[in-house]
Length: 436
Ligand code: DOR
Ligand code: ZN
Ligand code: ZN
Image (cartoon, rainbow, N blue to C red; front, top):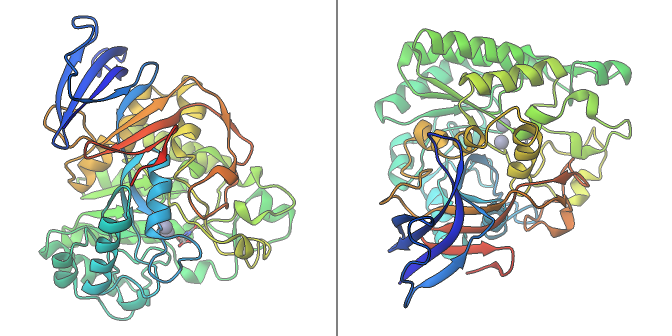
């Protein structure tokens, strides 16, 4: 059956202007676009109809860094709840990290996640596999078998790979299989015991700080190792000015390096952390200084940082209630990412809508070689309808993720998704909720 999405607003990439169009989906792909000005009502006999008047029709968002927690931490999130949360946030493709229990370090765990995503998931799920067994940094996993099982890249996210030799071996092996290495950059020896950045907040409260070098040392090391091995090296959640400088240098000499940044590192600094030390402000990397925030924004603008990801990291309320020192690192991201960025950067006039969408759709598709992130005829019909004009408050009680851990409670935002379509099927809508 065909579906017509009628009277939606689409972005003309050349002019940057919104135009009213109808789009027909057929067999899971975008079949045809028609200009509402030239054809007021297409022949919709026998078709499903979605009224998109007043809504933006955008490519489904792509999030290449998320935590779904299954297997092992189902009390934090499941593949079902996490993909539903993603759908509500406008995401149609997500890439979960392997720091589950057991760690996704065997073909069996990769297949388990893929099977669960097929039977219980709402969006496309492209899993990463671990670099090292149990993410302990001691022994490499079986990259060839993990690729064969469906892993799209290798990462020990959650921890840094401490040994340079192990990282070099991993890169050499990944390169031979034409697979990327994705790195959480953190030198443990510089971090021990710290949970906020070295900055105004740590000084004020007499806390040991996480220094910027703990991230940038790995970024620099790994860019050199990427040059030596030729691997596609992708840096996770860039948060410091120093990392940005190194990425700029690496790119300028043609090294195969890409990177990502999270909404919270573009919007919040350590100076925003409340004195109550609410653990919903604790994540890794930590919120950095205002200077780092501005460096990350500029790096994204100039293309030194390629894409935006959420690092959606749900934890239970009980875990986050332990106090900032003992609570786990991480905040949820799916259901606030687009409205936050749209409100803070597009409505303020700093970015165009086209730029924000690109960094969340076609750029992640380009970086990871995916066939999504475009609305061209013939492309998979992965679409989000977005209500750009409606203001609403962030209310964690309405989240579909099991996590309530967000620092953005009560923020008034625009740009809320209204419906999400994966492969031509409406998987979530504001009116109907999740459709399985
Ligand atoms: O904040 C974070 N949460 N950073 C990480 O590196 C891991 C993640 C998690 O798994 O909770
Ligand atoms: Zn990480
Ligand atoms: Zn992560």
